[in-house]
Length: 205
Image 1 (cartoon, rainbow, N blue to C red):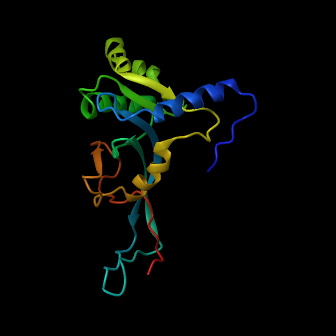
Image 2 (image 1 turned 60 degrees about the vertical axis):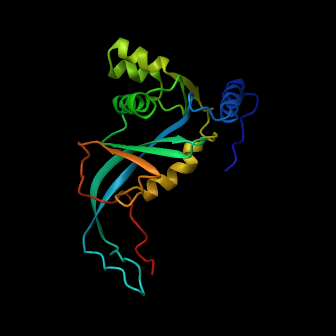
Image 3 (image 1 turned 180 degrees about the vertical axis):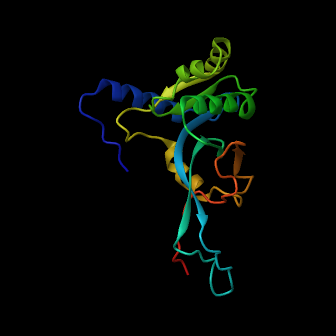
């Protein structure tokens, strides 16, 4: 996918050059580069029991399924450290985003001098959501731990997390290796018994 810039748009050029400069920085564990994005996913259940795998066929699912609502998957991708962290929540409101940012600051990178955060321009993205979720002192503490960067508008922008997020969302589930992912499941997910968040290919094999 190409990112074709609008003609004579100073704001686009400014944001693009800022993000490209951030992506070109060398790896610094004291100042980790984190790309944040989120997506809504369906929670699907089985109407009929899948047929077990055999030597001749893979595991086979029926083409009918049960809808069990949706969830939101937040991904924090560190391109220079080759790490991805997922957090699953019921929604993706400003309060959910703020909790993910606090998780990033206090649990994923508690000793970092500064977290270099790149994200898009969704209306919940930014330090203002911290002030909506937390007392002013806590919001300011978290905000000062982050160096904020925003990708250019329109949406055709260099989001590294978007390129890797598709793989993470498709593979999300109990079989995900903890060596590749660190998955935190919130206790209030709507349907914890549902193992999959995406319908597989029913006609494979």
